[in-house]
Image 1 (cartoon, rainbow, N blue to C red):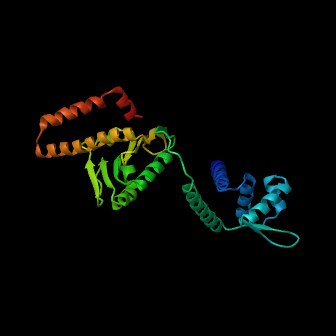
Image 2 (image 1 turned 135 degrees about the horizontal axis):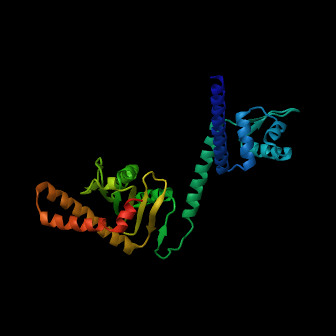
Image 3 (image 1 turned 120 degrees about the vertical axis):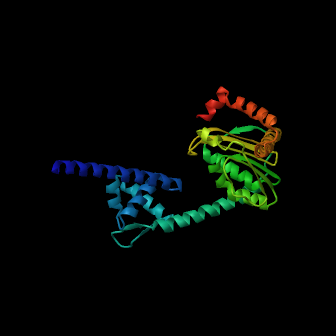
Length: 299
């Protein structure tokens, strides 16, 4: 039993080491992301975990040149990320991370605000309409949010439930600004004032897809078409275009699909127009039976 316990303790120790090591690497990467050099990041992390350390001690621990460590310490002090004692044996301590991060966040917001103001004053030429591809889901989500926030006349949004709910605030805000908003939904959606909701005639659609879609047309001048992995981590297809003609054509198709879906729902409820409904559903099923539809649906 003692041998087994020793093996378990050794295994637990290794797991703990790798967990801490990976966490430290992630912290260093994030510190570099907010403007610290690799050396400054390492020195700050040492000071954070070992307060009142000398420059010599840091250099020994990191196995780095002492002159480079001194330089990093002075830079951290100028950045208000570290403080030192006075006297012959100077000791260093990291500024508390909450204080540091609050200041960095405030500085970032100030710089972003100034940059926004300055860029708005720079005249830009209108380029030729085109189609652009997105490689990352965050780019899709931010573009959609920006389009919703800047909409002035009309929003047509066709999205699966888990992404639709993330834009509820932006949708409500657009409606309050007087923008006409129409949604095609695939699950119950809590009503919003001034927002038209067109439930899909096929709520089982989301269950047959291994991915999600998020499609948006704004003001008949731009649109996003996107198909993302179910966990929002990968782009399968994602495009944005400022081609007004394409936006209008796609908008016409989506508004027709919305109103036709409402018509079918009423027909099913009232048991009217069975032949018309069958014609539509048969044609729609032919599209869904194509090999390309099945390929994209199961990605």
